[in-house]
Length: 398
View 1 (cartoon, helix red, strand yellow):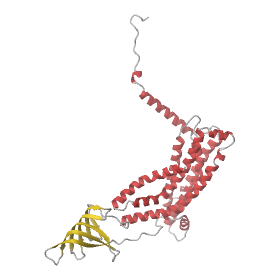
View 2 (cartoon, one colour):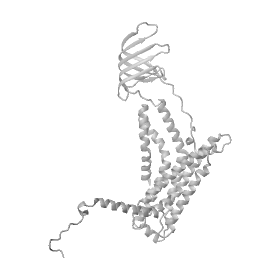
View 3 (cartoon, one colour):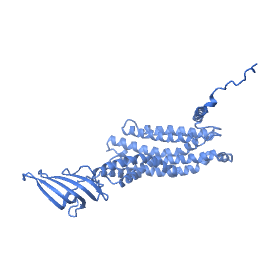
């Protein structure tokens, strides 16, 4: 179960990891922020990975018992399926409590931290670097271009800078190398120390631009003023469960906010309650037909859980718009899903020889047989397919 949980979470974050690397690279931010943002996304993915890991863990355990015929022995000595589900249900209750803590408390906090990191990345608060070979504008008055950067950006080579003053005066500076230094006197500014270069000073009061050379020149650069990130609660996904309860039934709250918070609250609760049905679903789909090792139940279980998760997301979106009550858009699909699972479990546990997906197994078996025949036909030696030649000797015919 733990292995399946880790695998599911890893697969879910792979695509997001690639996108984050592209965003961080385009913004010029530090690579370490990617892993911090992925860590904040884990609780969001765990809300789906925990149910999947739980269901597949139980399913694989019962499937192994069924294929090795140990399950038949257990039932022969009087152990019913309901009795065998006691330990899986104990694990389910623990993981349901963990999932409630994740979606109710950990997920909103991590989501807010993710949004904060994304804001700081795009605003430059994480120390976005100067892009090599491109012009970078600082405070709308300094244009800077660097040909080469070494020592993780500490040492710059081939520097060109153009500084425009409010009165129209302009400085064009080129230098062989330079580096950024902190300004102890002014924390809101940094110093670009340039070595071996030329300054062209163009002022309205000077008819001819003035050219100066230097061995070392300190160019002060004002840091951009960074606006503060908003407080937590700008989105419904950032509210804790008690906050959703408070906002969802507050009289002084706008109707749009009330609809969004109620939809989010019901969505989180129905996702947790759904976990109580997973042991029944896992057992119903774990037992293949007799004298068969079909793994169709594994595929069907994953499709059912993921499809139900997507239906809940759609139900939340519809309820957030105020088009329908969350009791209808979220809890009615839950009741339908629960009825289907209970029927599947009853077929396996109390109907002699019953199968939850017997018709699917029959169709899959028929299709596989046809595919094997077609493959065997194409693999057959062409010499065997030629008609036999008449080898009867002349004069021996009757």
